[in-house]
Image 1 (cartoon, rainbow, N blue to C red):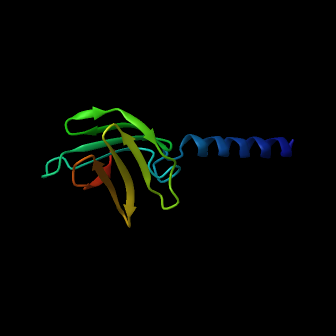
Image 2: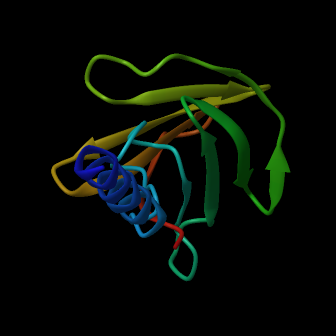
Image 3: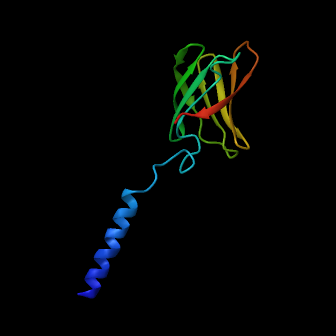
Length: 118
């Protein structure tokens, strides 16, 4: 009887721990798995990048959403590169800063600081 009661108490403790666990963040799994934004309110055009797992599924730039045509696997340095017709961008981390470098055909590359959308 004591063994069954002990097993029940342990199961309940584990269930309670799972119930009240903190929600997952980008730091818990894929480092970019979140919505990121930057450049709004400054001299740069605002951008938004939506990442699901290791794939960019949405990109807002120059006032409109752009059709992402390819998203490369996470690089060894933790960067993530994706492409669209006429350009590509790379998400990277420099210490605690998150950046996007945008390279469009015929334009000078732009680097914009990013923040994670809460």
